[in-house]
Amino acid sequence: MTLERFESIRELPLFAEMTGVSFDALTRGAFVQNFPPNMVMISEGEAADFLHIVQSGCVELFSTWTNRETSVTTLYENSTFILAATMKDRVNLMSARTLQKSRIIMIPSENVRNVFATDPAFALAIVDELARCYRATIRNMKNLKLRTSIERLANYILKQHHRQGEALSYQLPVEKRRLASYLGMTPENLSRAFNNLKPHGVAVDGQTITISDKTKLTAFAKPDMLID
Image 1 (spheres, rainbow, N blue to C red):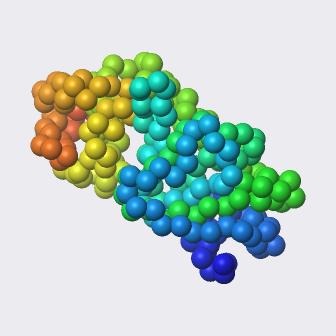
Image 2 (cartoon, helix red, strand yellow):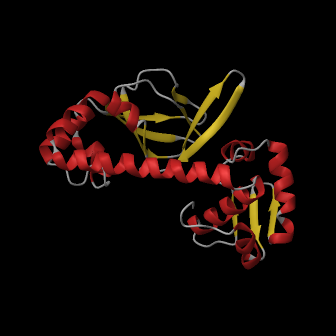
Image 3 (cartoon, rainbow, N blue to C red):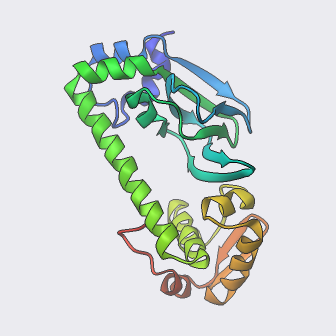
């Protein structure tokens, strides 16, 4: 496997400051794999043998208990996942599956731990990434605990509006049932929440969201930099 296969991740914050020697050691034994849509790549409870990086496509992290399932987050290009389990050499706490055709770089977890112990710049980047993920978890917890389901949906719509270039009409990036799970709702509650947002300047047609009055929607959602 030539190092050219990993050039796309060399400039990511996690790897940008490490030495070339360390990057060579890190990617020794790493490989790139293409996955079709709806393929489960890792399962919770299994050993975290690899650090995963989404080179292209879309991956959902999810978890199950008895007969219930919840969507934790959706990851896109250049996102890493299972970093904490990799560093602790513990089992995965979440499962991961592709939502569309995806290209994944897989780096042996042992390599990550070994280079962490010898390359200070990489170690600092790991700490920074874990801190970022921790803060994202706190924001998500506050969103779930402090807001009603309709308020969570309103802020999600605004967030996607900003992510998609301030578009006032756009396609939801995930299926509605997965969106409902991510927002802590049932599909039926999500449908009702969309209807309740109509007076606040939101219309939905299938997967298409249209913001007819951004001022009204913002006033209702009350986005907060300490949560969003």
